[in-house]
Length: 76
Image (tube, rainbow, N blue to C red):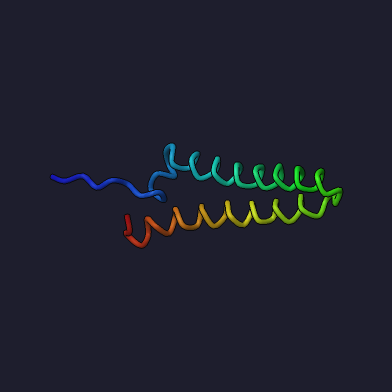
């Protein structure tokens, strides 16, 4: 009997959820850190911090959405 590999949504019960969560956190923190650095160099505090942090939030949610939908669509 062939065992199917669980997709990301099924792995949410195990360690797969940690992968999605850490990816989202890293995207937000990475965007905020990059924005802070750019603002420090250009003297435009908090413009780039906010913009890049929002892009990080969007990217994190998009990654989580794709991981979950990948399992429901049956794509590998």
